[in-house]
Image 1 (cartoon, rainbow, N blue to C red):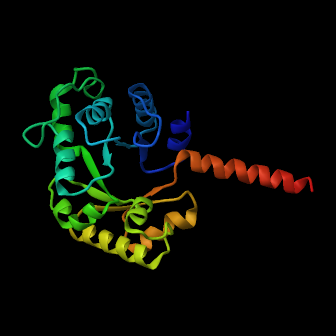
Image 2: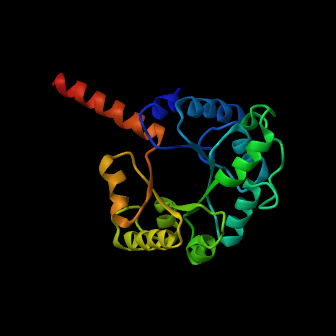
Image 3: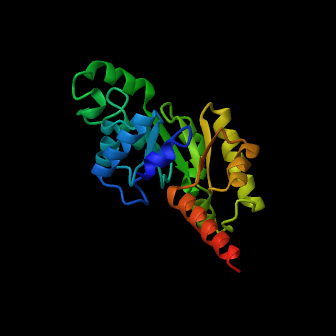
Length: 230
């Protein structure tokens, strides 16, 4: 239901968070059904660079994967290979739902080669150090800067306006765009916070999460109602 509410609001894409959220194969499939019905592309943030969650996500019909906790180019390359069939990669073959239950296998295999999206999160020192090597990987389609994790790892304040964090984020985004990749940033659910990354060079913003949108709405409602009664 939450996915349907969010997808119907007009976002350009959704991210199903299987890293931090309570996502099972069944919830992933039902959420994918909602995304397909509303015609909003959905990425799945996988819990680990492992063949099973990647195959689940793509076989159910996800547009691609968002890969967290990448520590360098080797991790990014492994994620790419697990997301693609040979000869690009080593994805296991079993496209059930995404091939219209085996009615459309050949055309799906071609679509998978052309359209499977792999976005690498830049949120560790290792990913920063090997950023150019990550961006040089042919089938890495873009990056997403995870500023909270990056700040914690680098000993910086978890404040998107911190000068050092701004400088690092801007540099990553500029290098990604120069390499012809999508350049993304995760932000909070506040409109100003979602607009700010564009000024740093982001071409993609992952704005807010469902529980944050809900918490802000209900907190504001209760605050306003109580203010009316004083």
